[in-house]
Length: 472
Image: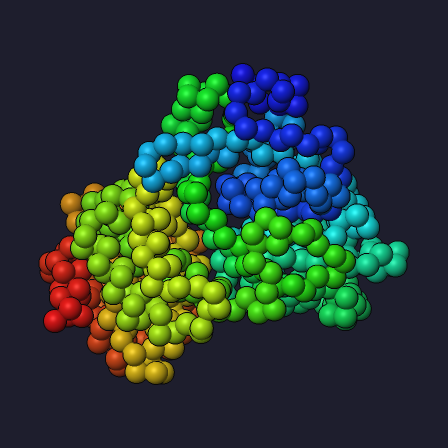
């Protein structure tokens, strides 16, 4: 049965019991991909199921050429979609999510998007625009920054209160990063707006957590076969989900604490925990795993050698850089991470984790290295992970097969990686990515050892040596 408003009553899985016709837009979200639909939209859906937050429905906004397909699917399905929860025991649960009630593709009608953003009812503008999406150097007028600042300028002129801008991207201090980017763009294009924003616009930091792989054809097919639902673009995710959000809002917020969102004064401890344990561990895993022949995350995480490598990284290098995390049992959290990575139902791909490394490693792993260099804590695992990235970026695996290196800096980094057989520090000499790490003797020594071992002995033997160093 094709998913739409007309068929919703007959859809044979859990679905909204609230009247979507009574829901109005209170949140505009840029970047309606898998993660937003498996995370923030699900929390809002849960509130709506409780009979709350009827004026906090979501209007999705697409700005990139790739977003046109999402616009088409949303139009065909009345913005409904299915969340498939992949349980560790191999079972699946499915439910229809109804909290996105509108979707607008900005290139088709930027004016309608600006007016929606400028409307008094739109009190939150949230973002999942990727870790690399906060540069304003090449930001187009009809991109995220242009649309939002034009809307804010109209609100200022009309005497309409500012919305809250909530970044949900995996960046340390994501709200602070968003504030800096939006106000810098406003300063360049709208005289006086940056000062108004500094006074009126709130940018709370947040920590978001749910492993959400790219939707595979198998998910679409099994949804139709096993659940009787035809959905052009469902989303699959693990059961675990978490959201920690600072309580700093310009114009109110939905009662998210009623659906297990942790509302705090300072999100920093939770944010560092997630970025430096989960996200950095994904980087520790993916390049070694790809070079060793793995293509699915759960297969690598179930390998005792890889699991032990991740445990040792988290215990000896990641954890020493964290602040105390109120209410969290860190040993339990770290063990849970290994179990989450090893969930076979999620079928997350190694390639997804390797994508966009030059955005991810500088934000998630290099801060760990720098802090441990300052404190004298170990760096062997982190340095080896950077070396595994450099080896991966050479563009050929250990069997001589080509690697399609997907990175916005690939044209720069791949040639550097290919030259490192002759010049071993070539890759880390890119100061735009690594800063001064190539001038840090302790890092360079650990990095060169790992890179040489990768070339001489391969990924698996290198991991065995690293794990043995810590264990002995």
